[in-house]
Amino acid sequence: MSTERLAKPKWLMMNANFGSGYRRVRSLLKEHGLHSVCQEASCPNMSECFESGTATFLILGHVCTRGCGFCDILKGKPKIHDLGEPQRLASAVAKLGLKHVVITSVTRDDLDDGGAAIFAATVNKLREYDPNIQIELLVPDFQGAKASVDMILDAAPEIFNHNIETVPRLYKTVRPRMGYKRSLSILKYAKGSGKVKLVKSGIFVGVGEREDEIKQTMQDICDTGVDILTIGQYLSPSELHLPVLKYYPPEDFVKFKQWGNEMGFKHTESGPLVRSSYKASHQSANLIEV
Ligand code: SF4
Image (cartoon, rainbow, N blue to C red):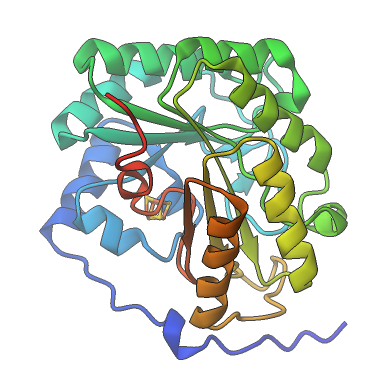
């Protein structure tokens, strides 16, 4: 396989802004002993999101038991089972004054419940601080354990999010320990539960998928009843990660959005730099009935 990597196109060049807002979010995370997926996964939008006073919290530590080829999060054996994290997170969210908070986690296959109880405790703590806060949980597949998914749904976040990430043919290389059908069934189950207001999922492109596969994957997600879909360009975090095989031009993302609208998603957020949590409150604005 050629090791030559594609050059990043100009539409992906960003002007980073490391101003006072950025520094404030960084130090707040540090003071509270918290992690963000923005930092751990080297998100290209970090300076913009931090500067605007928001971040996506990464709970259950910063070491993941899986290690997918696209993801920059550290892989290994996590040591942490941090029961104080929900309290510290709620305190940081209150200081940031967030009205919409996105929380995700590393995958914790080492824990019996996959960490679902900590997710639920975090939701409860956040509601103690602010009963009206909108909570979006981006959860792992819990190895398909229904009891863990139920724990998340019973906590009743406004938005249940679980990413499909890529087309089924590429699961073996991109998400080797995940199952396409399993992830779809989690989304369908969450939607059918009626316990959350919105169900959301996302994919990225650029790892070798064909357009017909993108469309079919979108349709499969739509068929589960998902309300919000995000589509973004994969960026390879390092030479040790999967290479980018295609940079889609912005007009392709306009086309994907159109497909999403035609299929019937309530909202499709599609763009080269779109990430699951990018401007998340905007993605669900007007969709959540208060
Ligand atoms: S897009 Fe999401 S993960 Fe990336 S910096 Fe913004 S909040 Fe963080």
